[in-house]
Image (cartoon, rainbow, N blue to C red):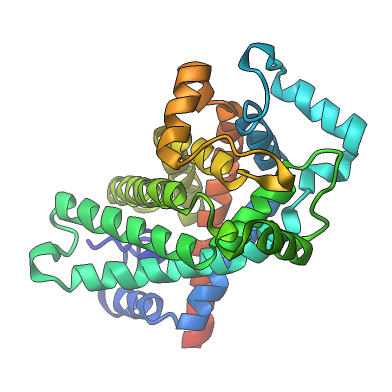
Length: 328
């Protein structure tokens, strides 16, 4: 029995003879354009579905930047959601969603596609090739491939990620009026490299986050389908994707919080608070304590379960459909 898992295989194929070989071949020969399309659409669908929770997470993450810690409001997630509805309107939950999609399409495409390529390259190395027989080698391949693909995608699309954070963090005052206006304003007021504020902190978080997500996902999926090969591929993808997202978010949330705050450094003409990602981490821990590093974790958890699950399930489904279409 061979399990082709996660981003690389599009689902475990438990077949025998010619049928098994044909299905595996069609999946492995999925074209570049099809992989990019599946990855991009999966990311856009996932982000749109979870946009309200994503905005709540960001608002909580940046809550202590320009406020006295002692006076920080201890509002609950539901109280903040009510404030958004009353002060900004229901549509404000999707504030910045357009740039999220514009960012997510290329990000997810590059992420999933480069993961396929990195994994294929690493599996071609004799010392790492196990054909599913050595779980330690498989985890190493998934972990490194996931980290490298995350770093590649984040670096290629970083300015859009920064603009997304600034648009999403806006409340009633609209300093940035859209994607192009934000890009022009940042370049004019902060210089070209203002578009890359917090890149170091971002790469520190993205690599481990994607690596943990992919490695946990593929390991769980391999184990599940080895034990229960007849279970629905969609159900397996959704469950394993959600669990991998929880593990990843828990481990890397402090880095994500530092990333968001660094991206807002000097935004809208406000004074700088942190000198670097490392100083930001120390400042937050010193002034706000350990809880400050996990500010906004609750809506993040609520977002992760459906968000990561939808992304993986959509990707697997589209890739399977595209593979059948290409082989028809």
